Length: 399
Ligand code: SAH
Image (tube, rainbow, N blue to C red; front, side, top):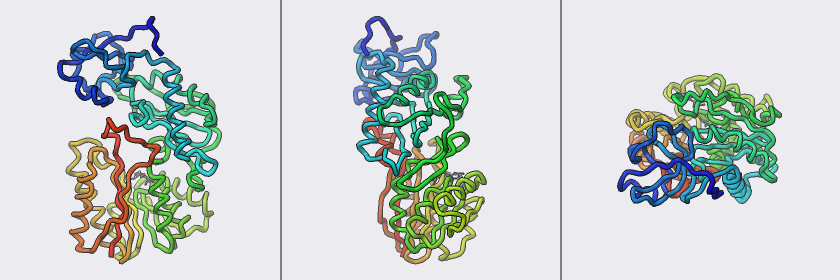
């Protein structure tokens, strides 16, 4: 790892800008750098030095507001073995968490900063890993990462699908193509907590499935018995499948995307056959909530997409959360249970709670918090990078 024959280009921090790095925060904003040589290539591995000449560590350089994503806080040259080691560490953690097992072969193997690999996401679906680069540095390293993935002892990964068409900076003109870089299509089925799901990594959102709701879906299964369930923003129907598995009387799934609705229907059929007590609606969830009958459901899931992708959209996002929560709390049957989420990183836990509490107050109903939910352990939060905590959820009991 320490190869004295290689010297990395060095970037120097402006005076006083080393403070957050001394606390191991993994990002350097462009304004914190004293300057960048004109010939420095995007995605290059760079050495970072403080204004007093002290070497702070190494990272990937990129044009944009986050100029460097730190890979290590030591004066090293990260080679292929460095990345293979990080992947082995990540897999060891998933094994220790009990996530790689015969009845559960879908899990997040690499969660960016949470696995000390900022800019890289890897989701595993049985024998296939879906690799997503969010930084130019990891785009250049995609073959190194892919090889290391299939070489992971015991992980059973044979195929690596690269899916970065929408995650890399457009201006970098890398023209990535979504395709297999090792292996080929084998099957599209994965197992989560004993339930089966088709995963559409070719065309689906993100890597094809929202693994971050696994534990929250499992909780819903334990509460669904005998209930009439509404799952809004259902995408692949994860919550719907778990609700049926938990003994729901019937489940209605809503998503504005017809593609999502057909994925949901297919996943329900895969687990429960064509006769399942399930209906699906390709309609706008806001409209559905506005028009639904009072008391039609006694378990409702609200899991919308990130309403605020950026701070500028915050006010509208909070209004959106308040509106859907107010409708659900107002109309849920007495004794109803509401699962409500926000996955917007720009919306804080407090802001989300306030939006939900305001919605509850607006309806005048008695509401209690049963559970406070977050992302699961295969989406770990690097303690020096609190921005990594993005998923927030509440389970409410409505009298
Ligand atoms: N709950 C899902 C993930 C939700 S992703 C799971 O557990 O897997 C968000 C979904 O909301 C997407 O499928 C998207 O198509 C859908 N969506 C976005 N805007 C919508 C709207 N206005 N009405 C209904 N669905 C919407």
